[in-house]
Amino acid sequence: MTARDIITRILAGIAVILIGIGINYVFLPAWNFQSGGMFGYIIIIAVIAAVAFFLAEAFEGVPFLTIISTAIAILFFVVWIIACITSSRLFNATKYQSLIKIEDGSFENDVVANNIQDIAVVDINTAKKLGDRTMAALQNPSWYELDNEYNLIIYQGKQYRISCINYGGFFEYNKAKSHGIPGYVLVNAITQEAQLVTLDSAIQYSPSAFFDKDLTRHLRDQYPSYIFGKSFFEIDEDGNPYWITSVKKSTIGLFGGKKEESFIITDACTGKSAEYLTDELPEWIDHAFDLNYLMDMVYCNYEYINGFFNFSKTGVNRTAYFYRDSEFPGYNTTISSDGIVFYTSVTPANTAESILGFIFANPRTGVVKFYSCSGAEESSAQAAAEGLVQNLGYDATFPTIINVDGNPTYFMVLKDGAGLIQRYALCNVSNYTQVFQASTLEETLKGFRLLIGTDDELQEEKELITTTGVIEFIDTAELDGYTYFYFTFTGNDNLYMSSIQNSNRQVLLTVGSIVTIEYMEYSEKGVYIVKTINF
Image 1 (cartoon, one colour):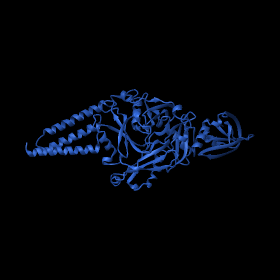
Image 2 (tube, rainbow, N blue to C red):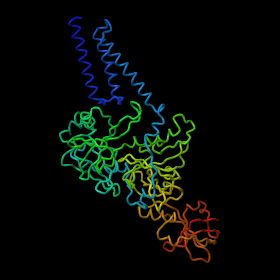
Image 3 (cartoon, one colour):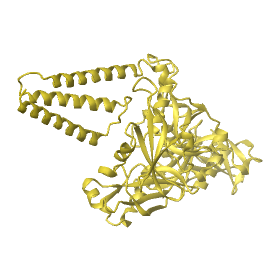
Image 4 (cartoon, rainbow, N blue to C red):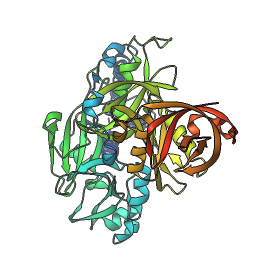
C-alpha cells in the first residue's frame, strides 16, 4: 500500500467523521439502544463510510474498510427490523392493551355541580385571536411570533391559556438572539383579558432557537442517552418560565410501549435542568404528559381488548379524539377535582351517534378516568346548539362536560364569523333536545335548569298541571334565539309560554284551536311555562 493510498483512506475517514458529526448535530439522535434514531444514524454513517472507502480505492477493488462498514450497516439494519417486528402491536397486543389502567371515576365527586362560572370559555382559537393583539407591545415585534398551543393552566388560582413567544425564523433569531425572548402571553380563560408578560431576564432556551440555545440540543448535551417526548411551556407561581420535557423508556421489546416515567424541568432563562419522577413534580406544573401519548395508550386499551385480530370489533370502543378531522379535534379542556383535565367522549367502535361515557385525562398525573354516561355524542349537541341560532350563523365550539344538578351536561360557546364569543349553550347529554342558549352564563344556566326542571326556585312548586282549552289569543316572540308561542284560553286569564322545541306543529295553531297542555304551577313573571302540548 502506497503512501498515497494511506492518505486517501485517512481523508475518507476524516470526511466520514465530519459528516457524522454534522448529522448528529442536526438530528440529535439519543445514544440509546431503545432509540430507533440511533440505529438509523449508525446505518446511514456506515453506508456513507462504505461508499467513501470504496471511492478512495478509485474502483480498483473492495477494501477491507468498505466490507466492515457494509457489514455494520447490514447488521444494524437486520437488528432494527427484528426489533421493530418483535416490538410491534401485532405480536404484543395484550401488552399494549395493558399499558394503562383506566380508572372508574365518580362524576358527582369529581365534577363540581353548577360550576359554570369556573369553566374556561376561551378555547384555543379564541385565545390565538386575543393573544395576537398583544404582540404590538413588543419591541421589534417582527422578530417574534406566538406559539399556537395555548395550554390551559392554573396560575395564582385563576385559569389562563398560556403561549410562549417564538422566534420568527432563522434570520429573525440572528437579529434577536442578543435580546432573547422577552416574555410570554397570558389569556384569562374566563374574562378573556389578554396580557403580554415581559420578564426581567429574557428567555434564552427555546425550541424555536438555533445552535446552542435550541432546547432539544441543550437537553441532548445534558442527557445524551435520553429519549425525549414533548416539551411544555409553563410558569411557576412567581411567573418564572420553564420547559417541562418528558423522558420515554421502552417497556415492550426494544422499541415498543414507550412510557413517560420522568420529566426534565428546564429554566427557560438560565438553562439549568433537573429530572423529576411523576410524583415529585412541583405543584405548579399542570402539563407534563402529552395528550397524544395518553390518548394513544387509551386507544390501545380499547382497541386490543380482544386481541389484535378482532375483525368484528367486539368490545372495542373509540374516543372522539381519534375520529374527528378538524383543526382542534375531538377534545376540550376542563377542570375537575384533580385539576386540569382533557375531556373526550367514548363511543362504540361501529357507531359515532351515541356515547357510552367520557374520559378525563390528567396531563399532570397521567391518570385517565372513565365516567359511564349514555347519550348523544358531541356533534349532535353542537348541531342542536347551532340550530337555536341558525338565523345568526353562530358556530358551536367542541363541547366540554359540566355537572348541572347532577346531570352530565355539554357546555359550548357560540362564536360569530369573526371568532368572537357571542353566546353560551348547555345541552343535556342524555337528551340532546334539551338545549338552551343565552348571552350570559347566568342566563344560560338558569334557562337550562328551568328547561330540565331543576331550578332551585321550582323545587317546591314544580308539579305539572294538565288542562285543555280553546285558544283565544296567540302570538310569537323571539327570546335568546328561540321562538316562543304565547297564548291564552277562553275563560282563563293565564298567559302560557311554549317553546318551539315542544312541537314544531305549533306553527299551525290559530285562534279557536283546541289544545291540551302540561304547565308548571310556578309562573315566571306571570307567565306559565308549558312543558308539553298536544292538539
